Length: 364
Image 1 (cartoon, rainbow, N blue to C red):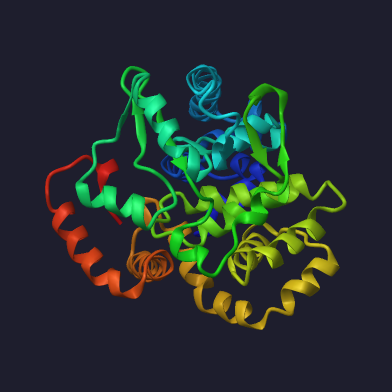
Image 2 (image 1 turned 180 degrees about the horizontal axis):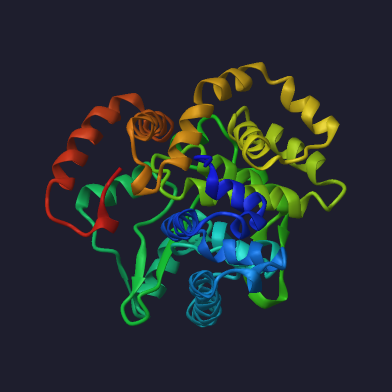
């Protein structure tokens, strides 16, 4: 059986009707571990095979989908609170990443769960927004002082906030790209256009091309790929959905040229083609094929990314997975902070992580 079994099933859910109980259990367990269970249920529903699956498989899939539905309801509730609490503080904000996809409320993204609510707030409004939230039941997440410095100095967001009663986690981004990347990349064009679903007023979303490019850059410039397979699959679905607009690929390429010479979009398109058979228009494909340096980078890291995505499930961890994680983690550090800060960061990370803590508070 293919080591890409979960990917094969996402591409063709009818495989679930042909595999034995052992491999079916493997797919369900791995999908749950990678936060893909709700999307797998949506794929089975779209393929009209859900009712043909064993009852226990249907129940497992539905449990994952219920988590997604609960998050949708929670997002609506938190939006109502944010609208009340930020009235007079800021006129609008933008939902990012998984939160934005939930606001699109399209069957293509049904089942896609998120870890927290991500919003973008212009830097000049961050302090006032934080103060308003801290006065309305939110508190900073319990993290070490060094993590606070990391978030404020090198990351693109404030220290995460958690609501005291509802336990919702909120990430406030004050710029769309990490600070160390902003020296090479211009995040301004990502904000030139937006979507305005009525349901999330007064907030907005990034435009389709900006949404895809932003998520690609964030995915391939990070350190931890715990949900890498979920995120690359999410990008694949966005390519499919947004490309229904005739100008999508043109706008996406134009935006990438305005933002700067980053290989994240090339990596995203190439991996989606290799893993999910993404179809790319000839003109767009010709543009990507001209990027020789990006092709070399993809040749170097392709297998690393695939190994990190495929072997992420604990039962499959092996030498390939460990080597891929180490390589990509070091690559991410080079992307996220200056070289002179990497060694001190690693030393402090080892010291802090050696102290007893919750798993969610591990530093990478």
